[in-house]
Length: 88
Image (cartoon, rainbow, N blue to C red):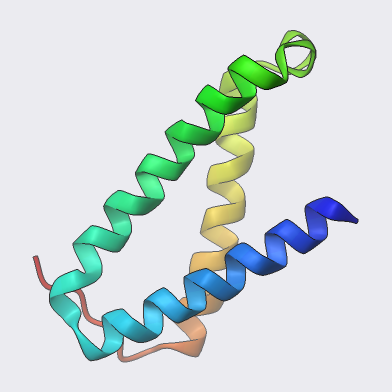
């Protein structure tokens, strides 16, 4: 259940960030960089704190699972925010 709560909290944060990007399109690239940073920070933290898990699952499988989850969230949020535009 902790995983579900964390996922819901991160989804709420992502929705708030997209709301900000809708009002300020120039901040969209920063939000994308933040996402990439958190992906690699998660892998680094898992390497340090969850070494037994990484022996059972490879870092690539965790990264792919995170990217699939991100794609699902992107599809949902894109549906909810159809006018979203990101400027560099």
